Length: 385
Ligand SMILES: *Cc1c(COP(=O)(O)O)cnc(C)c1O
Image 1 (cartoon, helix red, strand yellow):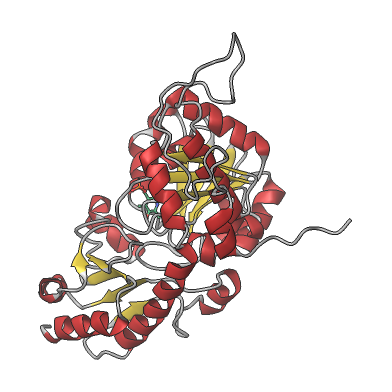
Image 2 (cartoon, protein in one colour):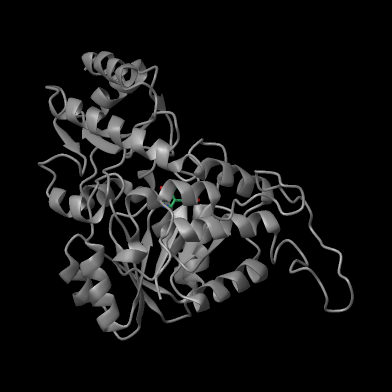
């Protein structure tokens, strides 16, 4: 039997789950703002009963995201954190989770300040060396949870190597793929068991809707997550689903420009005399540049650089006009942030020092504006140091 060739990524982004509406032919998936659905008789319905359990707009989005990550199914939630909470809710009291030590700040906050009260146990380690993962897995370990590249230090984890260890030790590997998006990195094809996303970032891409997704490699995971959507209710609302269906149509085009602009800005920063260090996997001197080339099909647009001090960072940030000082990332506009006082403030000075985050570090999410304008803005901003 010949296997039918999958359409390309951009085609799937535009068409999978986004087929014309069977009722009217509308080329865009309609937004179904209905909490409930008429039933034809007792136990007879058209597949929809109540929108917490399922909603047609959401179902189409879930089909689309599953296709983009190469999974069997996806389930979407009200935010990235709600998606991560759902994944952790698959575990039970006494279970142990091995985590990267350089995760998005909200994730250890959820793990340590909420879920540890329910008897889940967490170990935080440097997963950039896969052997560390093997060393800390214990009898009760059920899950390994990593981000690659990390925020803000842009450290990579070798997903192929870690997934082999996980398979051998019978532990699930979950990867937060927010930074790369499925366009540049597909963890399920490298052996991961589940992928999570803050769709708020690159997938939506326009900084106008929060959301989260879990993409599954096995039907049983999807069944359990669908149950959690219904039981716990942290589902993504139809309007946000619709925004995301619209956003992903341009994901491939946006990511190409994000990547091109990212490489150019990283090269500029690496050669600037006021910049002490640049963290970007696309630079040849990044310690994991070879792994980045192997595991990702682009380097993306997340760059961290060292200005030398809090004062320097602040002076530069105040001068910028094209780059906006704000939390978040992955939108069409260039956003710049100061990890020590913003995204990583909750870690405390000691926590930041332990993993290498300094007061002079600035993180930039390069947008898709004309790159000359972003460069000119950085030139004049850096001149103030
Ligand atoms: C933003 C982010 C999250 C949290 O997502 P929300 O949509 O803000 O809840 C999780 N992981 C990463 C890597 C993120 O950047």
